[in-house]
Amino acid sequence: MLATSFILPALSLLSAAVASPASGHALGARTVAVTSIKGGSYETCAKVAGDWFGYKYDFGCLCKDDVDEFASTNGIHSGIKSLISSYVSTHGSTHYYPPNSQPVCDNYGSYTCGSLSKQSSGACPPTTCDPKKTSTNGGCCPRGQTYSNGKCCGTVGCSRDQGKCTPVMQCPTYTSNDICCKTNEKGWTGYKTVCCPSGQQEDGSTGKCIPKCPTGKEYNPKTKMCETICDTKNGYSHEWSTEGKDLCCKKGETPYHTTCCPKWTVEIDHTGVCCPPGSKVEHGKCVSPTHGGGYPTKPKRSQLNFSPETPYGLEANVDASLCPSGFAACPIPGAAANSGSYECLDAMTDLQSCGGCASMGTGVDCTAIAGARWMGCSKGQCEVFSCKKGWTRSLNGTSCERN
Image (cartoon, rainbow, N blue to C red; front, side, top):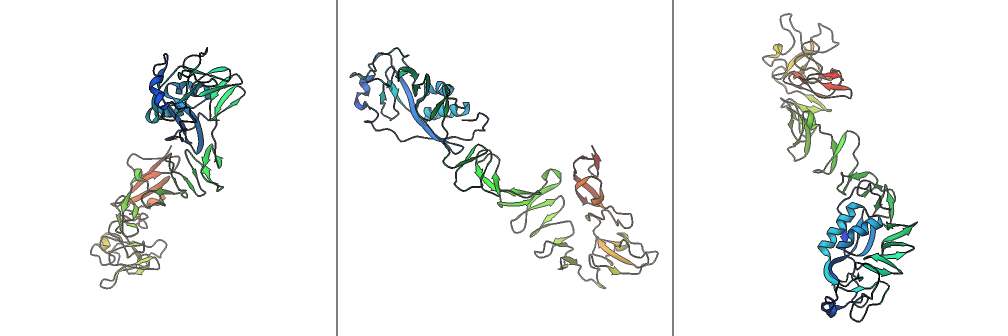
């Protein structure tokens, strides 16, 4: 049966092959003469057949004025009824039909008189049926329907069961979730309007199948690939790389070949590693460029002996003698206080030492913000872009608060 809860997509109604004039008792040249028969009317009629969610159906010859009654009698969904009516109006042909006649829909205005024989004048024999109904098997039924077991049902495409008429929806293959899968290959799953093979799903209600993406990724129609979800509502945006690839960058980052890099850094070759300009990448790590006595590597540590008057931090590197310009020379956590070991950090963008040296208490580890899901460091200040479930982003956007 036709479930009324189905969501209706665009319905493709196909005109069926028309009957030949001979098989449909075509009047051809006599059509003009038929108009002299009193009580008749001009009707727009068409054969209605097509495909609905993959189901094949054929409701036979229907006239526009009869669609409402046909749908009501045969349990046709209101959405299909509207589409049938629109199809008949657009594709049907209009001819004059005498009282009690049944159109054939052969585009010539041919008709029958139901179970009665047509008179020589072209009129249907006198009957007690309403002029817009046809005598069929001892009963009077609306055009497009026949009488059987005390019930009028569609001439084709409808079944009679316990006094009810239901449309026959035939799926030539198999069904999944009330959707007819247009394939004999097993394992397809029905979604809203279409069946998709294993590993794919429908794109909304478009009738198109797209790959199923793993958790944390989404389908990008531009690249036709599953890509990391870009949280555009919380400080992230899609950017084009130098090679025309779609990248997801957080606010303040610049797209390069294969990745986005924070301020003051660039991607080295096509490694996906962001380093200060002029650096090299060895084993996935930045090796800083040499300058004078040599910059320390990151994360490789260097040793210097500071005097008490020369503190660590941004100020200590104001002349770029310890690290690349703009970086802070930060003590390595856990190292001996007098060891002089340090690392070079960009305190303006470093997520774990934002605003200074976290090891000195002048910087903040943004990843340690309670409840934060997506966070960043911009201009030396932690920013929270989104929070975990059960937490709400604060008004100033620097922390998360429990709901």
